[in-house]
Each structure stands twice: as C-alpha cells, then as structure tokens.
Amino acid sequence: MQSVLVLSASFQPLSIVSAKRAVQLMRENKATALDLSGRLLHSATESIEVPYVVLLTYMVKQGNTTRTGFSRHGVLVRDNFQCLYCGDSATTIDHVVPRALGGKSTYDNCVAACQPCNSKKANKTLSQMGWNVPERTLVAPSHLANMLTKAKDESRLNVWKNYIYMYDPRLQPTG
Image (tube, rainbow, N blue to C red; front, side, top):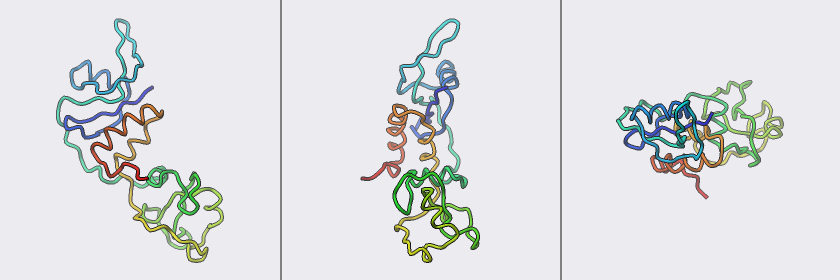
C-alpha cells in the first residue's frame, strides 16, 4: 500500500500515513491533496486518486521532533548509506570506540561502514588502524530526514523532498 506525507496547515511535515487513511482524511474534509500520484483507490461506489502529499485543514501542535531514538537505520540514514572510512556503500554500522573498549551505541560513537571496513577495523580504535575520521559532527538524524526514508519509490521521494526541504532546507544535500 502506498504511503502519503501529511503536512500541518503551516506546511510542517507531520507524519506518514497509508493511502487509505489519507483518502479518509480527504473525504472527511480534514485534508486536501497537494500532489496526486495518478493511482486510484477504488470503493464499491467511487474511485479516488491517491495523493502523494496531503495538507491538513487545521493546525496540529508538533512535539519535540528534533532528535530520534538511536537505531542502526538512523545511523545509515544520517551518513547517506556511505561508509565513513572509504566512501563505498554502507550496510553496517561501526562503533568508533569499540564496545569491547567501553564504546556505547550512540549517534556520536557510531558511523555507517561497509562490511570490509567494519571487519578490518574489528575491535581496534581508529588510531590503532591509522585511520582518520572526516571532521563532521556525529548527531542523530532529524525526524524529517527519517521521513524521507519511508518513500519507497523515486517519484514519491522526489515529491516529498520538495515539501520537507521547504520546511527545513538544512536537510537538502550539498554538492
């Protein structure tokens, strides 16, 4: 089932809902469609075009969404699925200070890594390996960045990016 980005009346990205729920919000006049997908949702009496994005007709107070809880997927998203050590495609995470040496599973100690680099580093520190970490802050990915990972196809991702970057341009990729 297709997922739909929900925006508050102020265009702040709030959540991702199913196509069925988005259509329900539209039928109850609680939301309006901003971008349509071209796909139809059929009922016994009608067919409704499924949106990519809906805008709520009322304001919703958003809680603290600046940080998300620690997760492997969150580390991979934050690092754009690229190995911090060699730049290849990352599928695993590595503890900069190994857990065997007291390192914690936190965003400031974990980085995305490819399998060969992760295996090669094992339980060694970066200084023992002679590796340098590029200078950047290791922080938790934002709630909005995590939303982009829920877009399962390229067309939906391209539409969602417009609304998420509009609200928080810091997420827009550089280069």
